[in-house]
View 1 (cartoon, rainbow, N blue to C red):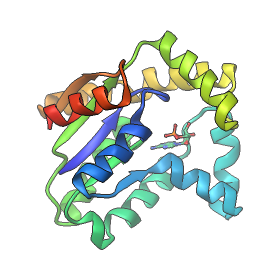
View 2: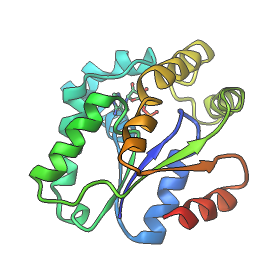
View 3: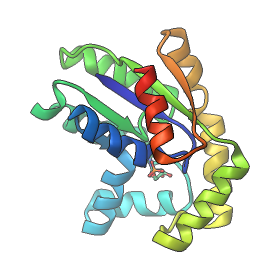
Length: 186
Ligand code: AMP
């Protein structure tokens, strides 16, 4: 099973991704988590990425593609994976398709779209800002991240739609309700 979780920041990709990991026993690959770990560790990559992330912009394609390629090449990703936060634009999606061919892996099975309205997204991210204190969960940055999502990432619904791989899931409800909806589509 090779799943992409698509949805605005705060749509629940991280949470549902963790539940899918437990359910299917395949790893989750989150470029956001990998970048935050690099920032925390103070690596050169982390230093480069931090300002861009804090501004709610997308870091360079080469950086995230490098992270994903390295991770997909590891043994535990051979039988499947869940991608959370990647791809984020059409160039990344095209590179991913080519990468899977190169790695001798089957293509993406499904792109699961967690659908949540913008106002609900803003409320959730402001709440997360209070609880987790992420540097990119400030209101102006949140609005910018949603704009970036709509401009850059939302078109991926078309990209994977043309491949017949998109399933839409209502992202409003309890964690378990949403999870059951996802599993029912896979
Ligand atoms: P996330 O936790 O997925 O919301 O990611 C947090 C931030 O990391 C994003 O706002 C971007 O700055 C950066 N980021 C994560 N994934 C990607 C990606 N696939 N392409 C570009 N930037 C990314």
